[in-house]
Image (tube, helix red, strand yellow):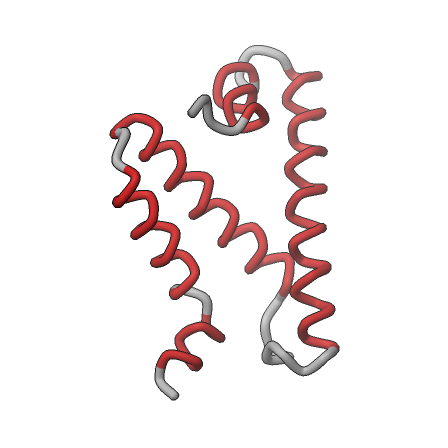
Length: 101
């Protein structure tokens, strides 16, 4: 697996080229906004608690997943990737509420 191309570019070029950094930031912001939109729609439908901040959770969750993929890429350990991704999902407040039911 070669990883996330946007993640790879971000790691390699952000500190070297300001224009590229800004373009990559726009891409990441778009990713976070799309995830936040889904979370907000789920809130509107009553599937998620109203007190969550969709954009905050979108960034946090995606950052955890991206970090898990970077570590897994280096370690070549699929089981750890699965565990880390599951842990990221379970760290979300609404997942913890579901688990306690």
